[in-house]
Every structure is written in C-alpha cells, then in structure tokens.
Amino acid sequence: MAVIHPFRALRPPADLVAQVASVPYDVVNTEEARALASGNPWSFLHVSRPEIDLPQGTDIYSEEVYKKAVDNFRELTERCPLKMETEPSLYLYRLIMGEQEQIGVVACCAVDEYDNNTILKHEKTRRDKEDDRTRHIMALRAQTGPVFLTYRGNQEIDTMVMEVTVTEALYDFTAPDGVQHTIWHVPDAVRFVQAFRDVPQFYIADGHHRAASASRARAEMREIQGDKHTGEEEYNFFLAVLFPAEQLRILPYNRVVRDLNGLSAEEFLAEVGKKFNVSEGASPAPASRGNWSMYLDGRWYGLTLKDASQLETDDPVASLDVSILQENLLDPILGIKDVRTDKRIDFVGGIRGTEELEQLVNDGRAAVAFSLSPTTIDDLLNVSDAGSIMPPKSTWFEPKLRDALLIHNI
Image (tube, rainbow, N blue to C red; front, side, top):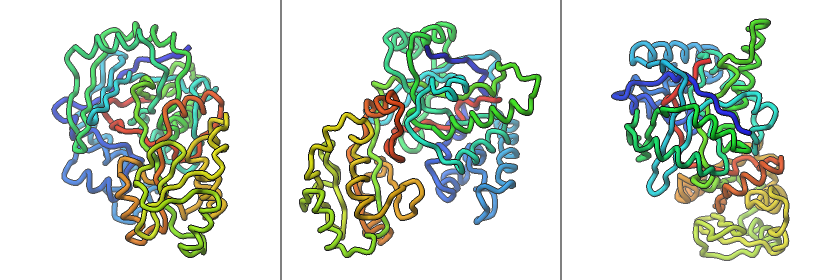
C-alpha cells in the first residue's frame, strides 16, 4: 500500500512562475547556474545555487553559501512574493518535450517509507552530496525540489488525472529549453489519496540524494523537537512527483575517460579486441542493447561482445549495458575500478547528444568516449524489486522537473 500526503505548497505568482522556476540544482555547475540566472532576480538558482551571488572561487560548501541561500529565499518569498496555499493540497504536473508527455501527481511521501525501504531505491548516494542538501533543507526549513518517483500504472488514477487536466491550470509556461510545464490544483485530494492506497509500490526514479537528505533532515528536526515530536510534523514527509512508469523516458548516460591507462591507441584497440568484436565506421549511437559505440582518435567504432552468453544472465544488474562495459573494458583495460571515485572518468547525459562526446575527445579533454543504449524503465523496476543497486550514472531522465514550482515547508 502506497501513501501520499497533501501539503500546503509555497508557490510563485502565475505571472512570475516562468522566471522563478529553475532547472534542478544538480544538473548545472556554478558557472552554468550563474549564466542562467543572469539578469533574473527571481530565478530560484539564487536559492538553490546561492554561490552565484558570492565572489568567484567561493567554496560551495562554506557556511556563507547556506546563509546566502536563506537570505535569498527570504527576499524571494517577501518580494516576489511567494504564496502559501490555504489548505493541504495535491497537484498535477505535466511536462511536454517534443513528443514526450508525462503527467505526475505532486504530493508528499512519508520519510518512514523511505527509511524502511517501502519506497524502493536503485542507487547508492554520496555522503558529500547528502551533506549539502541536508544543510540546504535545514537552513531553509524547506524542500524546494521534488523527488522523482514512479509506480506501475493504475487505470483508476489515470482516469482521475485526465479529469483534472480539463480544468483550468494554475501554471502553464514553456521554459527556455523548450519544455512545457503545466500545474493543476487537484480539487478532491481525498480521492487521490484513497486511489494510491491500491498502488503496491513506489520507486525512486531520480532524486536519491534529495530523498536521503530529507531523511537526514527529519532526524535532525526530531532531535530538535525532542519530546514534542509526534510523527505528524511536515518534516516527516518529503516532496515528490509520482509518474506512471509507462509514461517515462530514459536517455543513455554515456561515458568519457581522460586517458588510455598508459596504452597507445593501437595497444588499447588490441586489448579491446580480446573481449569485443570491433568494427570501424559505426554509428555514434548503438542500434540496440548489447552494442556499444566507442569514439577514439576521431573515429567511431562499434563493439559487440565475443562471449554473448554474458547477455543471457538473469541477474538484472549484470545484464545492463553499463555493467557489461564496466566489467569487460573500463575496469580490466582502463583500470577504472570505482566510477564513483575515479577522477579519470566522467559522464555525459544523453540529452547532450553524441556530438558532446566527440567534442570532449577532439579537444583533448578525454581520450576515449563510449555511447550506450539507454537503460529501460523495466530495468529500473526489476533492479529495484530485486533489492539491488544499479551502477552509478545508469539512467538519465528527460524532461527534467523544475525546482520551486511547489515548495514544501518543514
């Protein structure tokens, strides 16, 4: 049984929503955030990436950064101004990017269900990233960006969603990247709460660090409250958008490596040829699962396993293309044993295209690049159901949710 919780959203006025809503904090670096927020005092990047308003070179984890986030949040709340919903509510959030359309329910979910693995995960989190967002939540006393959850589709919920989408929207705007964002207020939250009780399982699709940080913030708030803690306070819940799995789109998460581990290009190709069939003149994007494209010295090569039995395993993690590439090439040939910590490897979301891979290699910022087929949503569900963990950077979801459309104060 899945439980959702209505909440009183803090949200921007309709005439300024397109200026306030920002890309997620973790898909841009400081300089990209500074450029996106330039000339726009309402951009929520001033809150989610407040170092952009401090001198260049400021440590992004310094105390002054979190203090600046608080100051900017207060100014935005008072001057924009942001409005607090009068009653606990649910919302719908639709994203349209080209032909891709998905509609999710915006609600809060219980931190307890995250902690006890009722909400399933497929990714490990990094402590430094948890530390950052926990400090951000505690400084603002708010969750400003949602966790992206999914569930196996439910016809009753689908019908209820369609009924709401014919009503007038709260917000409807197209962001600079061409993605259309539409928000509706749900008039009867109780119906949705009851319908979701028939959903057996929620899965984290994206936002593991946001969820982990909400859990850690709850632990800190509970300690602050002491004997006054009841379990019903808003800090016991985290902001989420819940999408039916059938609507979601995953793009590949490609890899680039800075050097060839001491090998020449010829030696490297020879080593690769021991495990893979290597063909020249390949397409930059592999045609199907079990195929990889590799960019080296200005050429694209196609890779297929010589031992195809590795593709037939019942292990939902070992069968992933990212796992096979790691076990057969990145680790044994390039010496990359832990992609979480090895600074020689980097990752490029599929939205950037294979041209980005070519550019990185041609500019000398990487020695070799690998283009992969995307992990599927069924892969994600199967790995999560098995209680397993995907390799880091296995999934890249598009389109991305925007921060600050609906804020959950704790």
